[in-house]
Image (cartoon, rainbow, N blue to C red):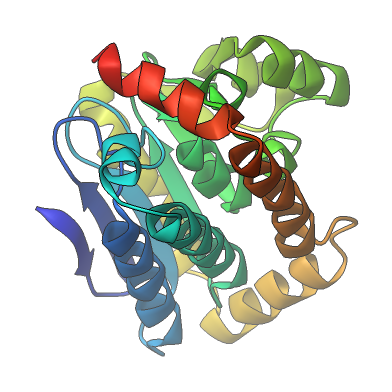
Amino acid sequence: MGITLRAGPIAEVVMDVPPVNALTVRHWHDLAGAVREAGEDPATRVVVLRAEGRGFNAGVDIKEMQASEGHRALVGANRGCYAAFAAVYDCAVPVIAAVHGFCLGGGVGLAGNADIVVASDDAYFGLPEVDRGALGAATHLARLVPQHLMRAMVYTCRTVTAGELRAFGSVLEVAPRDKLRELALEVAGGIAAKDPYVIRRAKESLNGIDPVDVKRAYRFEQGFTFELNLMGAGDAHRDRFVEGT
């Protein structure tokens, strides 16, 4: 359990952190390291990022944050998320996110920065940050849904389904949950069959023409999370969440 890397031409980075893949500070950094390691391996042609368990990713481990004194865990989680999202975006080869079940908070950051998203028919995506006294990953949600829907999702914390995202073109294909890994590997195989030098240059060129600097935009969002925490809103909402679970 934890974060594992299965190396190969089609590398798999797998999140398995029961019960809901809410990642601790260490897990976020482990995830960043695994994706970077996969991309730096010259034998890797494509990376599949997926998860085991009930859902793809439930964001940060709020219980760890509230159990820690001071702001160390908050800062650690923000730095860990930043590192993991950046590792996906900067990976030298395409990253395919295979999403099942819930994809919330930090999960949206990972999927939004991936090159391709495939999903199970029970997958749904959302940012519960406002209800947790935080902000962030709207940068990445904006890569998945249109601008006004993104704003509505941030303000209301509503979710969208994989089927809705497929209609927008941000989810490539939808499959039954038990066929999701097979679908992801099939898409990955089509990329892996291409000239690896050309694919790596294609990834570099696409990042170079991106109209939004996702790393800078996300860091800007994180500043407001720190403000909310300083004003007491962050702790108040996180405490209510922990008490309710």
